[in-house]
Length: 501
Image (tube, rainbow, N blue to C red):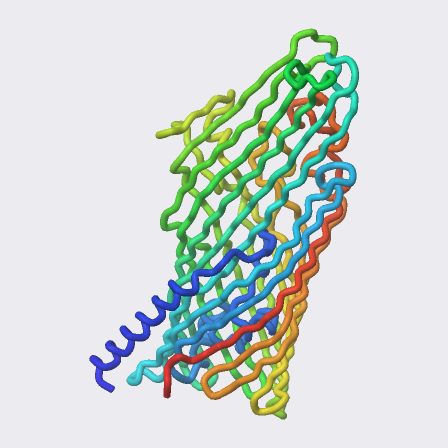
């Protein structure tokens, strides 16, 4: 094949890949943010719990270890889909008393599409282009309560109390780019991948609490005290993610290692709104005059930063002499990142912006993140049942990297509300191969728990005013929350080679 034919073939395949990406824009999935190993890419690597740094990752080699791209033997355009996920998140007493923060959700989404090319004049070199969703987290909680009690000092008698908590958080991370694997010899391969990451974060949190009195049927002449806490931001960040890999094969063993460099910001920004207010609140006992307060700020074009840390991964595969059994082991260490602004407001509110608070805009509207070091590990087995059927199963840890949960709903809080809990994943399934691809049927069960977590807010035992660290018309918070996370994911996917041989 001449150089012109190779370029034409590459152009055609790239065009098909781009059209396929447009047709496969993923839907929102359901997982909890704050962990590095919560994702699964193609079905083959997913059933092995991602323990594929030393090989057997299939078309996901570009992400797990680009050196193993060299294991692909022919040109192909492949699609890996789909995953069905049903998860239940429950944080008992998160909103006070017996009022939980919980969510039951079902999702369906596609996963990954890749294009692999082997130049005819450079048979030791393999090029892979890929588009996939690395992370797509969504959670929505809507809880409210209403009861009668007497807790407003300036109002004689009982008050009707109504409070609501609403949270909607959506975070997505799309990857696209290319990688190369080069066989130095039959036993040694090197690899490199460069991927563009598009991260999109949307967060909305609203708490309202009202205490009012009603005389008979007259709703016009009533006493009313209220408080409100509101955070909303939308932002995106485009970053360059690079990875170096090495792969070594010796008889019954394969070893792999990767170095993922810290991501490099290309561009990205967002809009943030934050408000904290209350009215008709008696902040001092015995004072006959009530207090009112409004702090609010809004700013656009705030630089967004979603940093990816330096990480080192290593893996080993053992191939039984029978050729039918493979044992796989992978571990990855993620370095920590000190506190930084992932929403970086500045002193000028800008167009359509404002700041009505005693704080400087960069202090009032900048939100922070701190990522602690994490070590994750996974183990898996792959068993050839016959020439067309393979069983895969594995287990992996998935520890949280969030250092500061930021639960308090106060004027000075500049962290997202989140619960810290670790998750453990079990995978199992079968792969059925045919002439131009394979079908995968399997499942993943994920379980996470945490005890003695701080309440988000206390809506069951309200107090008119405590101090500036706790929202008025809410109560004292305690470390009494029990978090339980259960997820059952069903793999019903396929990999199909669109290039006819």
